[in-house]
Length: 129
Image 1: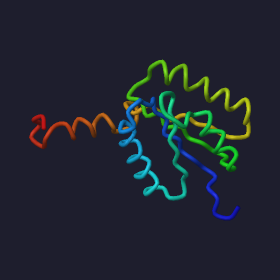
Image 2 (image 1 turned 90 degrees about the horizontal axis):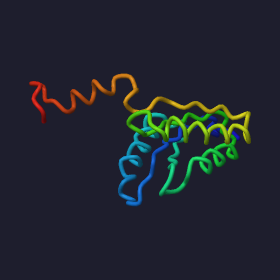
Image 3 (image 1 turned 90 degrees about the vertical axis):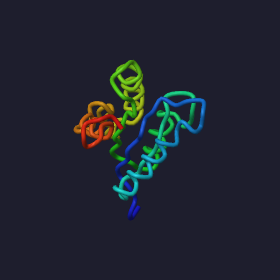
Image 4 (image 1 turned 180 degrees about the horizontal axis):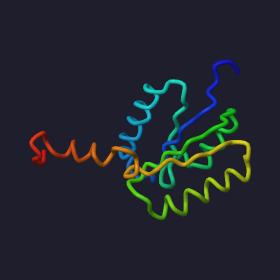
């Protein structure tokens, strides 16, 4: 498959009943795709929305993706990231051991994010916006 993508990133979020909840996630997907055109970017949800993570991982494996990075779009470590996500990854790895899966840090642990937010929330004079 000439030109086929061999890497993918999955934005993994909780999900919600309101479809508009996912709009920022879709904008993030678009931004990532613009910055990394050779990287396949997918979205998966834990619950309440489709597709779920097992389906997205399986679809990527069937497409020949050899390396998948999962970006948990959760603010901090909690039960979903500490328990649910590793269990889902382990189940997938048991079925597809040749596919390399890496789980990236949660949002609050990304380098520079807290500093970026502090600057964005405060004006140049240090006053709240």
